[in-house]
Each structure stands twice: as C-alpha cells, then as structure tokens.
Image 1: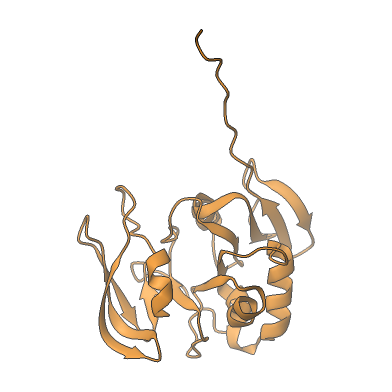
Image 2: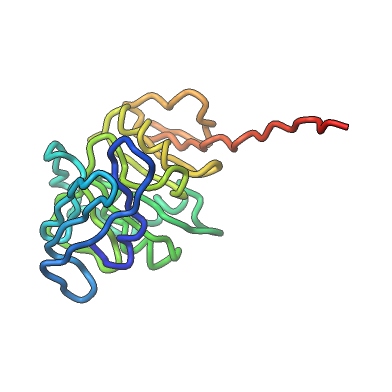
Length: 207
C-alpha cells in the first residue's frame, strides 16, 4: 500500500465517514508492506499483508490471469473507457483491469488503486485493496472504476456509491448496467456508463 494513498481510504462500516489511521509494521520505499489500518470511530481494523489492504472479510477471489495481460494495452483501454485524457482523479481498476494500474497512473496522473488483483508484482505508486461489495472510499470521491466479471452486481452498485457525479464506470457485459446510469458505449465484452449529475432543486425565496 503506497503510503501517500492511505489518506484516501475510509472505513466501510455503517457510520459517518471516517479516515483510517495506519499502524506500520514494515515499510519499504514508501510502500506499507505489513501493518494495520484502524478506524477511530468504530475501532475496526483492516490488515495490510504483502502491501495489500484487506477490506473483504477474506472473501475476495483471486485473478490468476492478470499478470499475463499487456499492461500498456490494458491501461490504454481503461484510460479511454474512463475518459481520463483531460482530467484525472482517483480510479479503481478491478480484477483483470488491475494489470494497467501503474501505467495508467503514470500516463494520466491518476491516483490508482487495484481491487482483487492477487498477484505478487507490486506496481509502483499504486494502492492495492481486497474488497467484497463495498469500496473503502468517500462517497462520490472517485473519477472512475473499471470492474471485470469476477465482480457481481452488488459490487457494481457499491462502486457507483463512490463514483462522483459525471464519473464513469466500466462493467462486464455479463452484469446488467444499473438503472439511471447513462450508456456511453458497449460491445460484446464491456459497457461504459456515466453516473448522472446531481440535480439541485431551486426554491423561490420568500419576500
């Protein structure tokens, strides 16, 4: 877990949003190799093992094929799907998409996290997390998220919660696009959607 990215993480339990405090057991070149992330509100603890922060409750599945993918090609496609050419922010690449995280971060300036990418190769400057259906980020804080078919529809709904209005989500064709998400593109494998902007209701002031 790249130490500068810890401040972006939040507790996943049901209470007001709270940052997490890192207790470091082993640090290597600004990456936390072993340690604990603790919530000051509910005292929940999330272990960091081999550089990966575990928010899954030990239920996340591995993606053994991720290391065979071409990182440049994956990053190029992810960047195009997520619309990161002109602006960047926090992005999450889940499953097989994780192969392009470091290249995407370097080329766009995005703060990149991988989700459920169980490989031994740690990518420089990238945060690694394990999740089930809840993503440990503040509401509406992420520019975009790409998930593959190792995730389910509940994870897609969880991803929408942390994507900012106007941000994009990429999902596999096997999972239906959530209601209210605008379709930008699709093919036989993937769909690309945009989270709708927030609507502000104007009220007439009293005289």
